Structures are given as structure tokens and as C-alpha cells.
Image 1 (cartoon, helix red, strand yellow):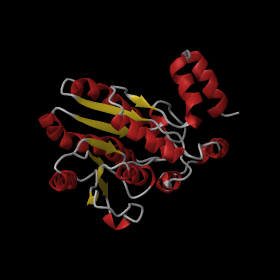
Image 2: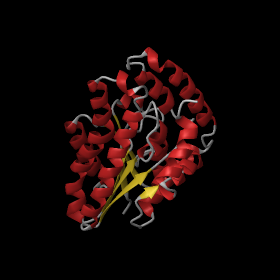
Image 3: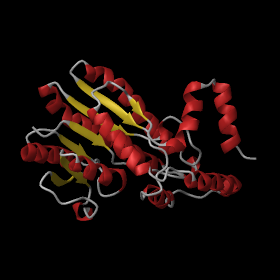
Length: 276
């Protein structure tokens, strides 16, 4: 029997590439997105079902899961990929903007997971794969709200995995770095336009903008392919491995975060992010 994956946020980027890759490997794919008119990046195939799902709309979540099970008889893996980055100085972000960031990146993934778990429990199997970020382990300036949402996603996933393991269900995390081929950075900039600009921060903004331009230039050219392969590995390797960090650009700072002392980590990141 073919296995089936449900993926959120498949209109572009990692989501679209992941949907097409799983389908090419012979999986049934439930490719979900907020607006199904934006399905141009999804291949047309009998084993792909395009379904409307907005992670901020619980009814659409339930409907997409029901449609997928009716179409393919089963769901084996859920990839919580839908998300965006709020980029800007924290002080300039309204409470509503922060709430929206968490509604999508955290509560949306939680609602999708909560909705699929009865199905997974009934068969004592299933895999939840949550798409985090290097920013889920590292607090980045001008992305403190985004980092906070991804820290929350990772903390929740890590605690959740123990609960689900008792039922034969796995929970896993993917931590990509930059991906110049996706629309994420441009959307990050668009979302940040809603953040109030505060003049006192302008010198820092100019400096950190140069830092990020340089970092974007070092992003893995094949980042999307690496991330997609990591998602597929997480879905098929049969292990209880929690984290997958597939892109090389983020590895030095992740290594400093996890494998050195706090003092050495701060000294390293200070050279990158603190005002000169």
C-alpha cells in the first residue's frame, strides 16, 4: 500500500518542492495551501491531491485531513511547513503582529498536529515533521519574533516526541538555513513593512543589513534540494532522530551554539551581530 504525506504551505518554496519530490518517489501527496489557485508549482498527477488548508482555520484543517483520508485511505506523515518570518526591530512590532507570527508558525502547526493525532493513534503509527529553522536554535537580531516562534516550535516538538513515542508516533524537526531559491526572504521583507521604524535603531539596521546580505550570499545554492531530501529522510529512515540540519551555511553557528561553552558562543556571535 502506498504511503501518504500531508504537507502544509505547498504553494511555493520548500512545500512545493517537497510535495513534488514525495510524489516522484511514489507517495500519495495531499498538497495543501491557503489559496488553491496558487497551485502552479505543484505537478499534476493521480497521486497528488491539492486541498485548501489555512493553518489559522481549524475547519479547513479538519476538512483537508478528511479529504485526504477519503482519497487515499490513510495518512502516514504530516509535514508542518506553512510559516513566514516577521523581520524588524521588536519595539516596532505591534502585539497583533507578534500574535499573527505565533498563530501561523506555532499554533497553526499545533492545530494541524492535534487534528491528525486521533488518526495516528488509531493505527499506532505516524510521523510529524515540523519545519523549523536555524533561527529555532539561535536568536537572530531583527528576527527576534521569528526566532521566538521557532524556539517555541522546537521546544514543543521536543516535549511532544516523548508523549507520542509511547504510541509508536514520531515527531521530528528540520532546521534549514538560508534558501535563496525560495520566496521566503522577499516575503520576510514584505511582512516587515508593517513594523514601525524607529530612528534610534537606524545605524544598527544599516550594519545588520550588510551582515544579512553577506549571509544570504553564502546560502547553499542547492538548499531547497538538501532540505527536501532531509524531510524525506526524516519520513523514511525509521529512526527516532529528532533534529535534521541539512544546509551547510547554518552549521558553524549551530555548532558554536551546541558544542561550545556559552562564553565562546557569545564571543563568536558578538563578532557577527554586535554594533562595531
